[in-house]
Amino acid sequence: MVLALNLEEMKVVQAHYANPSTQALRQQKGLPADRPTDAELEVIAQTWSEHCKHKEFNAIIDYHNRETGERKTITSLFKTYIKGATDRVRQSLLANGNHWLIKVFNDNAGVVRLNDRHLLVWKVETHNSPSALDPYGGAITGILGNNRDPLGTGIGGRRLLFNTNVLCFGSPNYQQPLLSGQLHPQRIFSGVRHGIEDGGNKSGVPTVNGAIVFDNRYSGKPLVYCGTGGLMPPYYEVSNENGTTQMPTWEKNIQVGDRIMMAGGRVGKDGIHGATFSSIEIDEHSPASAVQIGSPITQKLLGDFLVRACARGLVRCSTDNGAGGLSSSIGELATISGGAEVQLSQVPLKYSGLQPWEIFVSESQERMTLVVAPEQAEGLLQLAQYMEVELTDIGYFTNSGYLAVWYEQQPVALLDMHFLHEGVPQKYLSAEWVAPQWDEPEISAINDYTDLIISLLQRENICSREWVIRQYDHEVKGKTIVKSLMGEQGKCPQDAAVLRLDFDSYEGIAVSNGIIPRYGDISPYQMSAGAFDEAVRQIISVGGSLPNCSPQDGITWSVNDNFCVPDSVYDPIGNPDGKQNSRHWYRCAKHYTIWLRFSTFRLHRARIV
Picture 1 (cartoon, rainbow, N blue to C red):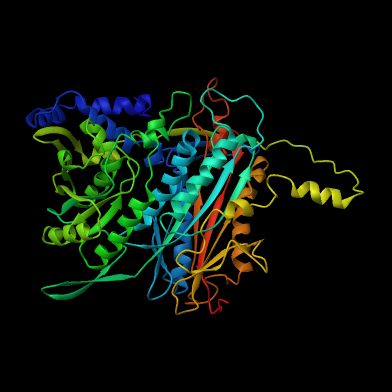
Picture 2 (picture 1 turned 90 degrees about the vertical axis):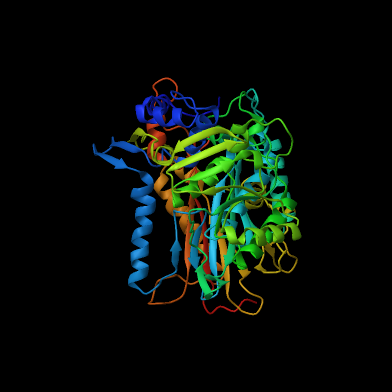
C-alpha cells in the first residue's frame, strides 16, 4: 500500500483503534469501531512518514566510537546539534544587540530580518526520489513546491526573489548495467535541468546560482536540492472598525470558526503517496503516479493573488499543499486551533472517479490552504474571481481536538489530533565510528603542464557549466546585480549571486553554496567544515562582511543546511553498514556524502555597481 510504516508503528496504530474509548467514540460517529478507514490509515501514514516527521533525525541513537571506546546516547540529532547550535547562535546574537533571527524550525520556511522594511523568507528542500522516477516532473514540482513554502510562511504572500539549486548525478557517460526501472544518469540529468528551467522561467523567478556534481554513486538516486528566497514586509496593516492594526507577517493565528479555503490547482491522482514513497527505497515497483504534474503558470497566478490578498488583510494565515496534500496542510494548521471539519465533496477535481481518501492525501500541485475569517470570505472570493484563481470553501476550524473529514453526509475520517501528530513512536538506531582506511595517492613527476591542464578541464566536475546556466533566466525581475556569468564577454562564473532588495537603494543579499562530497569518504566533519568554509568565502569574495562582530552591526547571515542519508536501520543481512550510515548522517545515495550550505546576507555599506 506504499504506507512506509514499520511493524512497531503499525502496532501502535492497531493499539489506538483497540482502545475502548476510541471505539466508543467511533461507534457514536458512525465509523468502523475497531479499525481505521482507508482515509485514516493513509493520513496517518503520510503524517508519520520519514519525509514529514524526520524520524531518523529525531531518533534515539546508541553511539559507539570504536577508536576511543566512548559510548553515549544521543536523543535527536536535530535537537542536539542543529537546533542546539542555532540556539547558541541566537544567544550570541542577542548578547550583541543583533535581533535579526525571527523564526526558525516551526513554519514552512525560516525568517530573518534584513532591515526595517524587509524580512527574508528562505527555504531549501529535496526532490530526490521523484526525480529518479520522473526527472522533469520531479524537478519542476520540486522548484514550484519550494516556491510555495515562502509563499505560505506566516500569514503568507511573500514576493519571491530568487531560486537556486544543487544537483548531484551519476556520470552522463555511465556505462554500467542499469537495474530494473533505473533511468540512465544522462536522462535524469537532462530531465532535471529541463524541469528547473520551466519551473523558474515560466513562473518568473530568477535562477541565480547553483552547483552540479557528478559521481557514479549517485546513479541510483540523484540529489535535487531546490532553494527559494522571498521578501516580505515586517507587518501588514489591516483596517477594521477599530482603526488600523499592524499584524506581524511571520505569525500564524487561527480562531475557531475560521473558514478553510483551497486556492489554485485542482486535485487529481498525481502525487498520491508522494510523501510515503519518498520515505522508502526506490525499486521497479515504485509508483510513477507519486510524482506530481507541475503547472508554473497556474502557480504564478496563485502567487500573485496571494501577495495581494494577504496585503489587503483578507487572509488570516496560509500554508501550501505539499506532502500529504490537504491532509497535511489542514492537519498541521488545525494544531493551532485544536481541530477542523473538512467537506471533501466541495474540493474541485481534475476529473471524476477519485475516492475520498485520494482527494484528501493527493499532492497535486499549485495549491494553497488559506485560513480566512468568515467576514472576509466574500471579499477574498471576489478577488480570486478577478485574478482568475479558483478558490473553494471546504470547511472550518474547531477546537474539538479532532480532524473530522466528510464526503457529503458520510464520515470519512475522525483523527485524534494528539495521536496524529505525537503518536508516532520514537525510532532507535545504533551508530558506530570506525576511522576509514585509505592510501595516500602517489603523484608522479609532471613534464607537460599544458596537457595536464587540458585533461583536468575536460573532467565532468571541473568543466564549464555555461551551457546549463544559459538555459535559466537569471535576469527576470531586474534585481540580479552579480549574475551567474559575468566578465567582459559574460562567460566568467561568479562565486555568489547578489540581488537588490529595492530599485532605489544599494542594499542587497548575496547567495552562495558549498558542497565537497568526496571529503566525506575520509572525514564527514572536515567535509562539513569545508563546505561551510566554501560558502562563506564566496560571500566574502563579492563584498560581504562577517556578522555579529560588533553590537548592532546590522549584518545578517543565515545558513540553510540540508542532509541526505541512506537507510540507517542496521540489519546484518539487508543493511550491514547501517551503523556507519547513522554515524555519518551526511552520506547520500549508496556510498556518498554531502553538506549543502546556502548563505544569504545584507550587504553592509557596500555599493552595488
